[in-house]
Image (cartoon, rainbow, N blue to C red; front, side):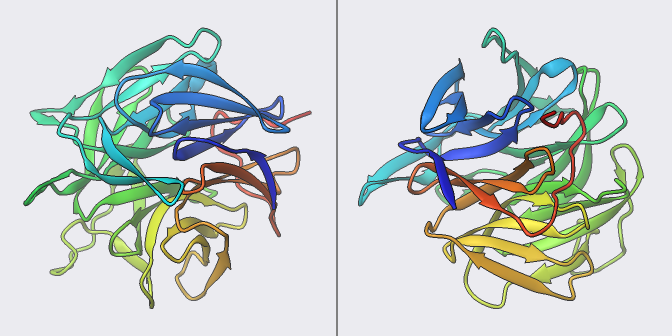
Length: 305
């Protein structure tokens, strides 16, 4: 493991760039940042709220899930989240060349977004994203999966209700959508019928209609995720810090421990997509790992030449 940036304020949402740099968000600093390696970082854009997830979109723009705001405390030198702020969240688009940010969506129909968390682009001009819901005192809002057009023309609800959905990803052939729930440490999958339309299984105990892939057999929590070129789902794992590698049929899983209890996200980069960029949020670090197989090249992702 190689540390390429440190002293970060709860990093998330790594995005591997073709010039070898890595974009990422810092929730506790309210900014989109860039790491160049050798511990050199810069601020790309300052934003309101807490940017929670990032993805490269069309025309070189960076799309952010902004959860609206999170309380942070420092414990034993680590900056850690300790509850939601009441402000609703939104989706915004950042021009990395200028740092200018514009809000794209903040509601779907009559429902304001609560806590947009993570997103993934498809090949049809849109993106799926999770809204984890928001917990305020004794009130808990349910989680949702949405689908939005990249040009801001339409956003629709794709699945509801979930328990704090977080990481989201597509299979290599883009026919399956994967979502991880944080507190339950479960991964669900949906067959994609059309952009934003998911096949819902009729299951009395799973009202969102997703197909159960796998659950945890010990206490841990799931955060954001990436998908490998072979279709395995790799989930940032909290409490039992590390990366949990899951076979797409749920038949096997493998835990890769890392020295941080808040491993929040992973992105694949490099010319061969074998470099895993991992956010170690508790200790405020961005790390690079040599992965044992190539990751999946994302829509709109350009590779180094």
